Amino acid sequence: MPPRSIPAQPIFADPSEKVVWEELMAQLPQDAVVVHGLKILEANQEFEMDFIIFWSDLGVAVLEVKGGEVTPNEDDSFTQRDAKGKRDVFPMAQATKNMYALKRFLTQKSSVAHFSARPAVVLPYADIPSAYSRPTIPRGSIHDEVDLASLGDRIMRDLSNQGFRPTTLEIRALLGALSMPLATQKSLTEMGIEREAQVVELTEQQFAILDLCIAMPKFSILGSAGCGKTYIAIEQARRRAAAGDRVLFLCYNYGLSEYIRRRFEGFEHLEQLVIGTLHSLGNKLGMQGERGTGDGYWDSVLPDQLVEHLKNMPDELKYDTVVIDEAQDFHADWWSVVIGALRDEDKGRIYAFGDIRQGIFRQATDIPLQQSKLHLDKNLRNALPIAQLAALCVEEPLDLIGLDGPPVQWVESTNEEAEAAANEEVKKLISQGWKLSDICVLTTGSRHELQRTQGDGAMSRPYWKRYFEEESVYHCTIGGFKGLERRAVVIAMNGWKDPDRKKDILYTGITRARDLLIICGSKEEITQSGGKEFFKKLSRGA
Image 1 (tube, rainbow, N blue to C red):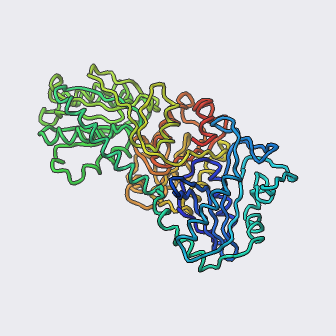
Image 2: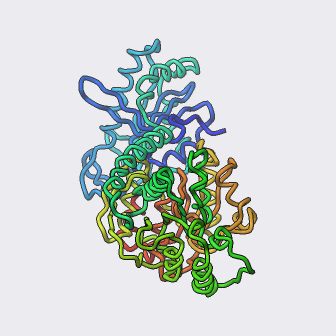
Image 3: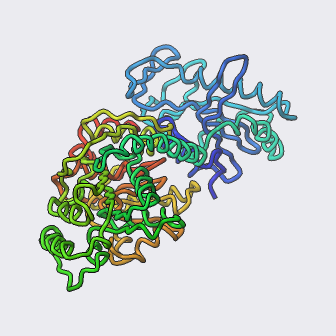
């Protein structure tokens, strides 16, 4: 059994902290407790501790972690080179100050008068000579990249040389004294709840756009991923149905159409709504006959057939309003169907919502209708590190207003190894306390092996039932998951369905993650798809 972690799902300010945390969780015994990111306020001075280890019958270790390239100097300082630049740091002095602040706090707040405590420094990407020694910095208290494999044993040896070893009961008392500052730490769950509330509030503010558009019978809203387009589309459909319109709500993906359908459950005017995909539109319009197959059928033959069918359809069966989500996925020939579905081509309402950068399908196109166009540039959905990484995939500037979150993680793997690497990351997430229904694995190319065993593909109702109703990790291609989201997304870069749209596919995939994103892929693939700056930011912990 691993040691207890507080919080159970830490938010790491730097990838180096994640590396250290994983080693501690793997090496320490179950009677140890690992506390991450504790802040103590003392006389208007804040002490922030990367890690504190409470170890029964041994003592307390206060760890200061420094990422990047770290080299020792002639004095007690080190030179650190990372994404922030080059600077001199004093990690042992910092760890020592934090240790004394912690001891002062705990002896004041608990019944434990004395206990052993030791400061230490962890440099997971550094190579410190074994002969290194300073009067105030013993080599045994410096743990570099080589030392990580035996970090638990090294901390144990360091603590063993001290007196006043706290018992299990005393450790419990010390942890109890920390209950107040620990309660101020925000878990990923809490931040996710806050972000969801923020999304709802900001999306409702954006509904004002619809008030401005009330006099425009046709308009399109274009915006980046995470700006709330689907929410606004649903709200517009609600408003028009409540006003008495017969409303046709279309999208390209079956999964997205199922999500939209579920959002209307219990809606008072549901009889005014027809919701579906392009591929199911023939059935919904009552068109008879055998369906064809192949791209040519879906892109050209079926639209032509539907146009002819609509010409003979009574007006009372047609629609006053058509709402389209992910409109960039519509083949150009389908827009004649959209117009033909209106009772009155001139007075009928068409509201199209899309993001050209998510046009990852072969037939993707710009919205050809002569409409009034509005643009949304506020990313509401994604945690800030995810949104910042996504912004590197688009040319237009984005207004990133989401809450902070953990850094985006990169797991190096080949195309062939990507699925297996993603599976391992899922296991780690589950061990950290993530719910199965919070996690999704997305592939850039072919379907994940587990997806192939879950149903017969994107048009399968049982397959999508797993996403909406079952407590399970979901597996899908990025294309099949367009318009949807989960709190934690693991991307397996296992090749490309369309190599010409690599950046757009990657952009679409990473914006499916609300709180946490992990990318499994090679440096070469990531650089080719996202660009050099994208990889640079990802490798340093976006």
